[in-house]
Length: 367
Image (cartoon, rainbow, N blue to C red; front, side, top):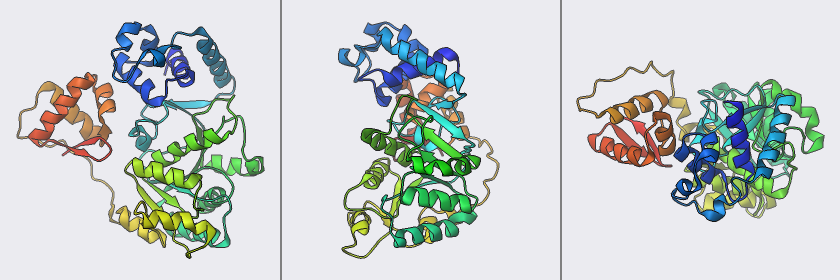
């Protein structure tokens, strides 16, 4: 990523009325982050869902000034970063329309070809919840999954410390900039997590741990994982928000049941009762339902000979899906350099020919 592209992404992150969904629309339409600021306003207004209110601050120099200031901080403190356009961006999160356009990271995070699950729950963890965290990690450790959580009090820090104790990579998703530790009492755990895993955030160095930031952070926890596990939760709470987001992303959700009437089992019991979550009594339940115990080392992919004639654009997309696996329409269009409207119709033709298939979450894969 060039300096200009990073600054453009920072500008888009900070401009009012331009969220991640709209920012991606602008970038995909224009071809790059920098092109968004070079294109004419009348062209941008033709994008579906983009109006004058959305773009009213696009060329405001004050947001460029703020982006340059944050860019200087990133350089000075050697902050690592990754955009949704990069191959290193968390693959599951790339399939979420509202995934952050830019993430900042610290530590030794390695996500390629890894099993990833998120574990969340109440900050007021009970002895029952703590024991389940320890047992769950001990049972699932042989499969070497990455454990994602929020580095908060209670279930979060309990599951992340258990993961480290068993040599598993663990990632804390933060609701503030990487220049802070919250809660401060958890500063003593930072190094052990960074040694095998680390921290991710979409927030700048100027961002404080405010309530709305935690709610926003939850979509990253839910989005970057194959499944979300809720260990304990009261009838209301942030972990239930994370579970709802994971459910909306068509991801598997698991909840640990508890006794009827127990305050910190009410949320989990309700998730199960509402059929928003699978009942989780041990790691074996998750392993079975995700099909992990059936997995073996994948054989080398060999390009199969198709007995259908593909147009050049179809062949390009087919080759791309064979190499990349499941992808959303926007990323197919961007990486294959084919306009979205043409990509959509091409995918339909390919589906009719039986060479691709659509999947939940607006994904497509080669057959």
